[in-house]
Image (cartoon, rainbow, N blue to C red; front, side):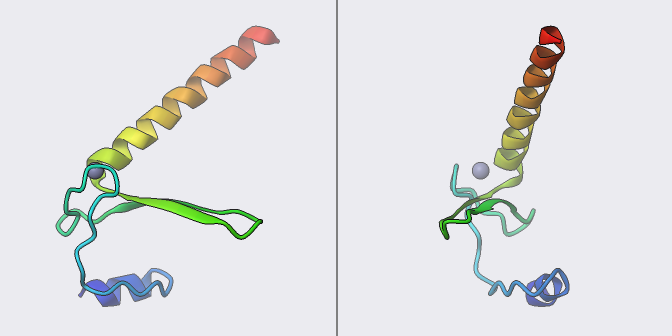
Length: 77
Ligand SMILES: [Zn+2]
């Protein structure tokens, strides 16, 4: 089930092992997990696999940062 779904989503094969959140260690077996990933041009790869709560926290934090910068930019113009 998991394997077929992942293949349909672009070929990344994930075996049916439980993914644990890299931040809080929670199991993401039931909810699925989010990935924050970078592949830099110097060849370095880094990433975090996040549970729904931690991913939501990361997204909210980044959106707040975006809004703060956006407001700051408008203030300078
Ligand atoms: Zn987490």
